[in-house]
Length: 256
Ligand code: CIR
Image 1 (cartoon, rainbow, N blue to C red):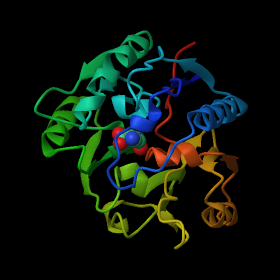
Image 2: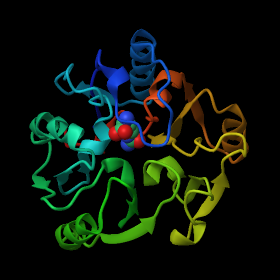
Image 3: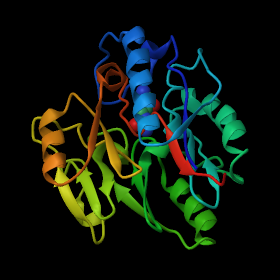
Image 4: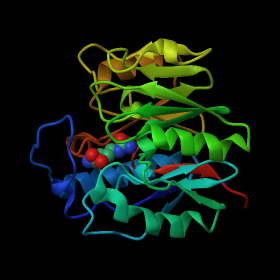
C-alpha cells in the first residue's frame, strides 16, 4: 500500500523560513487550494493520503518531507537545520511510528529531509545550510546495517539537495547543474532544467508518474520529451515559501 503523509497548510505560512528567496506576499487561501490539488494528484496515482495532525502555529509544518526519511526498514526522524522547525518532528514521529520502527538524528547533527535523495541503496545527502557533516556520520552508521551507502554531495545557491536534483525515472535525474555537479551521481541519465527555470529541478516521482509545478512549463516540456508522465499541479504560493513538490509529502510503501 502506497502511503503519502501530508499536513495542512498553516494559517501562519507567510511567516515561514526563507533563505534564498525574497519575502513576497503569500495568499494562504491559494496555498491551501494548491495543497488540495497536490493531495488529489497523489490520490490519482493510487496513494493513500494520511494527514499528520495540523500545526497551525508552526509556519513551515506543511513541508513534512524535512522531518523524516522513510525507508523500507526504518523511518529516521530528522533534526531540522532551522531551530524554528524542530517542533514539527514529534507529531510526524507519532504518525510514522504506526508504520515503521523509528530512529532519531541526535544533536549536534542537523539534517532536513529535503537534503536526502535515495536512489536504490544509495542515499545522497546534500551538505547545505541545513544539513551538517555530523548528520552524514550518524546516517552512515545507522543505515550501514541495511547496506545503504551514504554519499555526501556539496550544494550551492539553493536551499536543499532536492532543490537542485530529483529522481524522475529509474535511472533518470532532473537537475540544475549550477546548483549541484552531475558527476556526484553514479550511473544516471540527466534532464537539465530550462535556463529560465533555475528552481525547476524539484519533481516528485511517485508510482511511475512525476508530480510537477505547472509554473515551469519549459522544463515540463523537456520531461515529456524524455518520456516522463507529468502531472502538473499549481504551486506558486508554496514556491514563495521556498517549498516544492517533494517537500509536501513523505511517501513510502507500507504493509497492508
Ligand atoms: C524552510 O525554509 O524550511 C521552508 N520555508 C521551506 C522548506 C522546503 N522544504 C523542502 O524543500 N524539502
